[in-house]
Image (cartoon, rainbow, N blue to C red; front, side):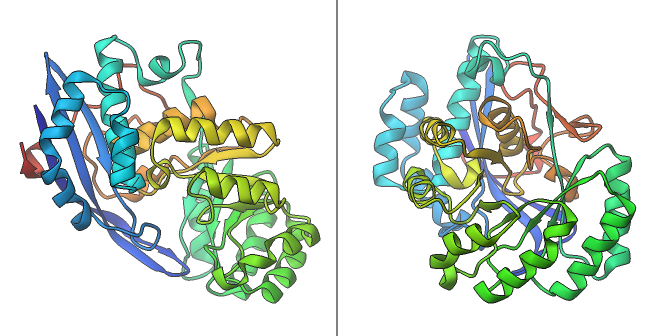
Length: 359
């Protein structure tokens, strides 16, 4: 039987980016019970990054409830492809694909990673620590110190609000932590002229790469900025499907692609797109969309299979949430995400605290 729930989880403290902050994460939990097995999927569009909301998706799930239930019991290979034509919503497709993949992995008594890639031996995935925009340099250094003590080798800083202050913080980080890998996420906050100037100032500070440096209106300047920059450029918001990847690669606009499965959609579409990127020596870094343990674990598994081995992945975001849908105490180990060692996602969720929508 298929059950559909909604959830709201507060952040420990508001997670701040240049465009605003997140104080609560909301989403939809899919739960399918059959023959003694329970499988999960998560649908969690992210405000500011998705073009639709949980409130848009719930009525679709109610309307398509019988069709989805029938698909889960019959395993029609074309269902998701046809569903995408009708509902081109990546988070919805990712949640359904996670649900059915978790179910079939459990039917075969396999972990999710072994179901998707029988030859894998990886048990830990290196992760970066994500730090939202902070009030001042001392605050940033305090968080960085804590993350380094926890075993993280890579720090991802959200920037784009006040470059002078952020630059001082970066200098301070480099003074105290010369070996830590440092990457920046601008979230489309700089105009071309500012970006060009800032990247030159940042060049001596060994920045691993910088995500989405340009305002959307300056998107046509990406190629020019990449040619002039000593720092690698990564696409995140500009990369949501295979078509985006083709454009970015063909025009030589980026060095890396940041793949958010919750914003991308079906697993098979990810696989095809990653093959394209690999054929052009473009690295793929996976990252969550600040969702719960369900989507986060699926993202970690996908990063272990398809993600670059040269870069740490953005999969440690569970620490930003005050609570979660399942116990996550042992999720991280020394800056590494521990992949499931039980069948499927390896998660058991107590749904009593969630809001049952249907089922």
